[in-house]
Image (cartoon, rainbow, N blue to C red; front, side, top):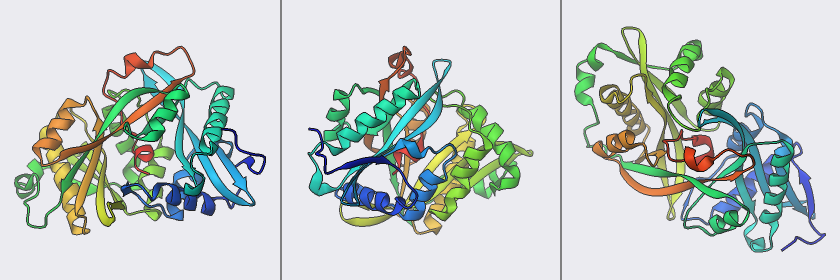
Length: 344
């Protein structure tokens, strides 16, 4: 269905952020599980994102009111040994009273055209495999590429924390400290080296890591812990605090992101980091911890399950190929988890 001439198609203009953010909350607020957005979050998530392109924000306006929007951002991803340029479709939003009129589909078509103009290798988005939108994306040439699993752990104040025995032994001779901007460069080197084994990862520059780990603090509480042994960074992890609305109740939730160890399958270091993140989460009054990993990351899955996490849901990353690259072969491998796209 093509929208009538009553609708004006345009791109982002300064000052649109309030309406676009309110539109997102209206469109997704009816879901049984929903993460409300503040205006500060939207500004951080888009306007302050390194490389943000206002022409990638597609809007339908009626009578001066923004009624539908789609946002396309861009990232590099290393897949199958090649560095690809991908467009990422976020926040496909329409005012609920206008659902079914083809507004979001029109904007999706515009985002596909824009990706083709920029000669991108593909367009990617994230969808509930059981949701109605998944079927629509299939019609537009998107294919299922990778499944991501959501793991949660209920945090009880009386429950002993993971790895407390390591804490009592001063972390096997090591020390946990908060990441600062002064040691961000060293951290970036270790972080990037640890994640190069993951498909769909491309080393992150200092500007991107600063945006993710420090600039985000004005949008929501965030802290990153690093573990050192003999002055060497052995691993790290980030804790973010978000209010999630689940089945009508507000749940203060700890999002555990970017956890890594410099040595593969280093369970001891992983336990120390996980313990610290959960300890901080409990101190901040979180009642639940959430972590997302690629479906075939077997070591990480077993590690979380052995420490009280349960798999509760999944999302599918879909890709519309715009080049000759064979995404189906790459999808067989363990993928990097792009949290900023998966946690709205």
